[in-house]
Length: 108
Image (cartoon, rainbow, N blue to C red; front, side, top):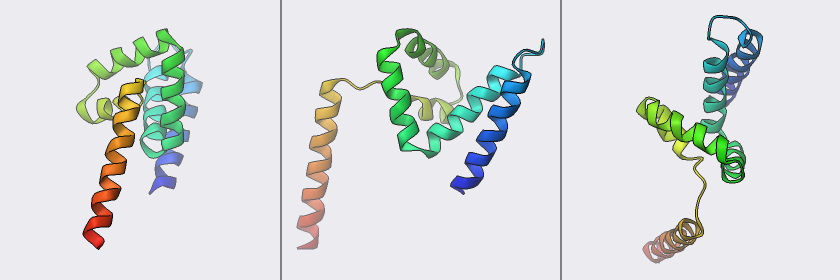
């Protein structure tokens, strides 16, 4: 399934690049949909986008704009790439630790 989604993303990005300069506004939406498919299926891509959003304020602003206007399912994918604060990272680590601990206790 992942391979099919990546192939679809590649087709969307290729069509987006081919039509970006046309007067009909199809290029950018196709590029965005292709990028969303890749982000949805790849943790590495989501981390890369998160890192870029953290360092590039304008990119982060554009993603926030998209998150607010996108349908719920697409917005949820984009929100996964939000830059995390140190507090969020610590909370995530603590949650993982507690989950592992409860899983180990359940097995015992």
